[in-house]
Each structure stands twice: as C-alpha cells, then as structure tokens.
Length: 574
Image (cartoon, rainbow, N blue to C red; front, side):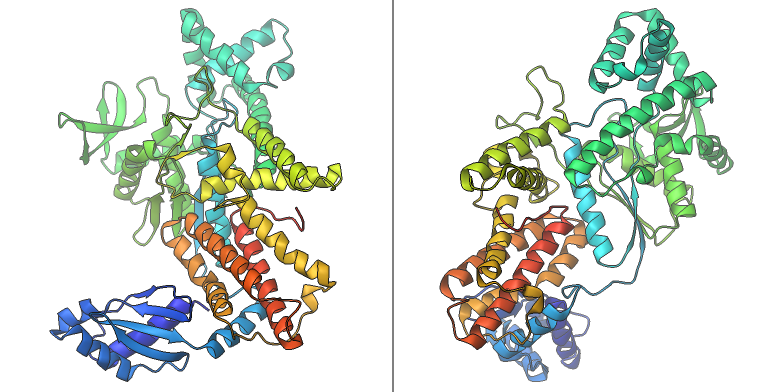
C-alpha cells in the first residue's frame, strides 16, 4: 500500500465533497517523534480558487473526511491539515506488509520501457566515467521491473565510427607483420593509444585508416573479420566489469551501433521522402528551426557525411526508429551524460518530425554530472588518462578487505574476501547512487567506505546487526508468526517509515533519482538503530518480544530489498 496515496485519495474525496475537486491538496509528510503525522498542505491553493479562507475550507474538509485510520485530524497554522495516524492502523498495516512478498509495492499497469545505459566505447576499456550511466541505469531497470514493467536493457555500445578505422588499419598492419593479435588486444588501452599515435604521426596511415571506415561500413569481409575479433575481446572486458559490479547487463543486451548499419540507407531514404534532407558541403543533413548556432545559422543534424559514411546521428535515429516501431515502447530512457544534451535534443526532434516517435511515446534524456577528484577536477590519472573502472573495483575491494580485517579479524580469509567484495563494490555504487544524478560529486575513498553516515557499509552493517539478533536467539525469522503491536513512540516512527517503502519506490521513478531510495534506506536504518537501543527485543515480555522480532525482520527485508534494487548485495555478518 502506498500510504501517501491512500491519504491523498481520502483528502481528494473530501475536497470533492467540499466543492473543490479541481484544486487537489498535496500530502506532505512531516516527521514527529510521538505520532504518525502526515500534513495536507495544498489547502491554501484550493481556498484561493474558491474564494474562501484557508482555515474555513480546512474545517469543511475535515468535516467531510472519512478516515478511520486517523486518531485525530486537526487544523494547523494558516490552513494545514494534520493527520495523526492511529497506532492500531499502523500495526495492522505492518502485519499485512510483512505477509506481502512484494513489500507493499503494487504492480503498475505493465509498460514496455527501453533503458539505454552504460554504452561504453568498445575501442577502449571502461573507465570511471562509465560508473554513473551504468549504475544509475541499472538501478532504474531494477526498480521498474519491480513495479511490474517489461524492461528492455539496451547497451548501445560504440562499435562503429571513425576511431575504428585507425584500429583496423593498425590490426591489419600487425597481422601482415605476423604479430599475434590476441596477445596485443589483452590491453585494449595500450592498443588504442598505439593506433591513435600512429594516426596522428603518419599521414599515409591516417589516410588508410579513413578508407577502412568506409570499407567497414560497406561490409568489406577483411575489415569485418578484423573488426569482429576486436569487438569480441572488447565485450569480454566489459562483461567482466559488469559481473564484478553486479550489473544486470549481459551480452544479450548489447544492441550496438553496428546493429543498425543496414537500416541507415533506409532511414536516409525515408527522411528524403519526407522532404527533410538538405545537402550542405556534400553532406546530407536535417535542419530544424529550433537548432541554430550562436550567429543564428541553422545547426545541421548530419545523417550522411560527404564521404558516404554515416555518423552517430544516423545510427541514433535508426535506434529510435527500431525502439518505436519494432519494440513499440511506451518509454525510452536515455541515461547519457549531460554533455550530450544538445545531440539528444536534436535527435528526438528529428525523430518526432519523421514520425518515428509517436504521440504517447516518451523518449527522454536523463543526464548526469561528472565524477571529480578532491581538487574539483575531473577524476583522471596524473597524466590525464581516464581511470580504468576495473582498477577502481580492485582498489575498492582491497580497501574493504583491510577494513573488514580490522573490524572482525577472527573471520577466516575466505569469509573476509567475500565480505570485502560485497562491501567494496557496494561502496562505490552507493556513493554514486546516493547523489542527485544531475550534480557532480567528489570521489572520496574514506567517505564511501565509512561505516558511519549515508554509505553502503553503514546500511550493510545495519542489516547484519538485525540478523545477528536472530542468530543470538537461535530463531529462524521465516518461522515467525503473530501480529505486530505498536506501543512506543520509536515503534511508531519505525513502523511508519517501513510503510513508506512503496511510496519511496514510486517517487524514485518520477524523475529516476535513485538517491531518494538511498535516503529512505539511510533514514530507515537510523530509525531502527534508535529503536534497537531504546526498545529491548529479546528481554521484553514474550508478546512484545514476538512483535519486535517481527518489526526487526521486516526492517531487514526492506533494507535488503532496497539495496538489491540498487544492485548492492548484503552479507549475513561483517
């Protein structure tokens, strides 16, 4: 049950009865230590439309309000309505919640939703910048699936384009010299740098590299064979990173730029038939009035270059066409960094004009900021190179191992290694997901691996602390029976927070901000810690002990489920 929605519907009905059905009140939660308190703060707006005094309208609403769940409903301030939920209602709702395998999150009408995320360039290894798109997109996919939607994970990897010309020319050159390509490709970064260096220093090689791009896009067998060898090695690198990061992407989710190659001439022809194509310096472009340069000149969306090759815009248009017409999506969510804002705005505008995006289909760019070092500069190595994501994972696990060893040295090495993997990976993902996706953030090892504050280790430790209660008591939580009772203020607070899991999940998908779920879990863990310290569990009277064990188990389940939706694992002890 979405508690906020439940109360909102009651207020809406009362507003309708009061003659203000077109002026819905907004329900806003305001935490109070002694009772479950929600506040309707939209009464003033409704009163203004109706020409009434806010407190008078609030009194009318309260008189019409049918809400047995409340102990008390009162007017506060200039016209707020405070709703004090009863302990009995909260206790009964918690008992029902615990019996629900889906923890109160009711399935939505199923939609088909494409999520375009991660999308590394296969010419190089994944770097720290890929953490944002990959983690945020994967969390969105998990949450939307939890709501009952059909999610299509689309890893639109860059396996096409100009940079592959130099790579293929370099591979062909090495192959002609008898060099074993397999060993050369084991370090993609060095291979890429060698090819790029040769492209910059050797004009003959550069010219041959440009020829290879056209040959590749034209289906040349030799180029395709070399390209496929490179792509296979690159995908292996990426999949190893996904597996270690607990990212739900697989090879089957790759729908690369090259997959749309056969559709590119079709797209060009369809845009031409619609009268959208104009030539500019030999290139075939789409010009839209809403996209102009600083001097007011039209800004082109290039669909085909003057040499006959197709740029990113063409394959992106083909991808929109495929997602709209073949997959028939309701939504397509592009988790791509903010620097691509203009490109994607232009892409969607062209696609809408071509009727590739139909009315009712939501194609949306969900941008994000960048990861910074403590000095506020982009997170790169000393020589300016991108930090490899595989190296970040290694360091996170190593640091976590040292922390786990210092915290619990009596565990055997295998246990410490397993815990370090879960804690280290969880720490870097949570540091990402706990921030507003639109903001830049500083990558700080000490903060993200701390067992205090809003971090993954803190939440993972809170989970293990709850499970330790059951281990000490020798109780299997799955065998617990009975009803939850609410008698103490801290039980009320904890219970109310548990009931807000469903509304939190709904809030996350309003603008795909995973940090809302992170903040909820952090607050939930903090409330449980307060409850744990003030309300004895195993030393209370039998009926109270049984109830508090049920509360503890429900808290653990929601913490674990919430972390799973973020793609973060838990352990039973730390």
